[in-house]
Image 1 (cartoon, one colour):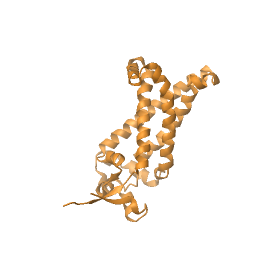
Image 2: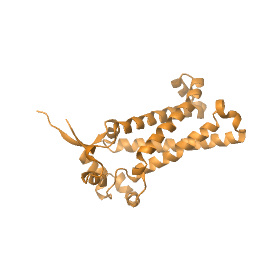
Image 3: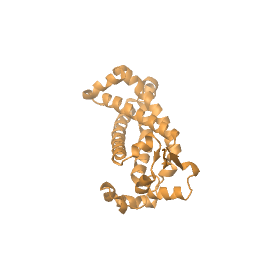
Image 4: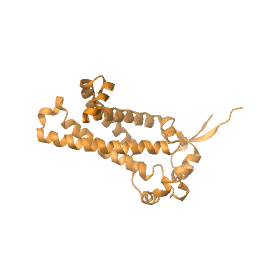
Length: 219
């Protein structure tokens, strides 16, 4: 006898593909960037076929990352706008960390932590992209002076470190909150998950504010 259950569509297929392209690009850039950052990590260049290939593909992957993240901005900027409830959520961060979300104010589709990750990357990725163009010697080396390139290298490195820290926090939170990864791999969450972690969003769905197809039956 077959049974079905109700699930909530959190991310569409387009959302998920866009996210994973961004994630893969970021990981590749991190690995190749670390290999160029310090000799002790140069062994990572072997993942790209050697130092020359790594230096050649690194900026092109950066261009793809910028385009991919622009896609995420277009899709998600509205639901990441900061609201008054985000301040209340931050005040209850201790309860969030202690997994006592019954005492946390109801959260919309994204909580303040997720919004922080989104806007941090929205700032850092363009900084990485434009400073990367300045130090891309093959195409722009003759257009900029050496002092400008040195400043760009410093800013690029600092922005990369900040972006890696934000990414680590993002990955840790996704793993720590059970079934969050499934939302980005399979696209759906259960009503129970939504009630526990994003109660205000669930209420909006129940009120029909997000369209009829947001809730579906799964076998």
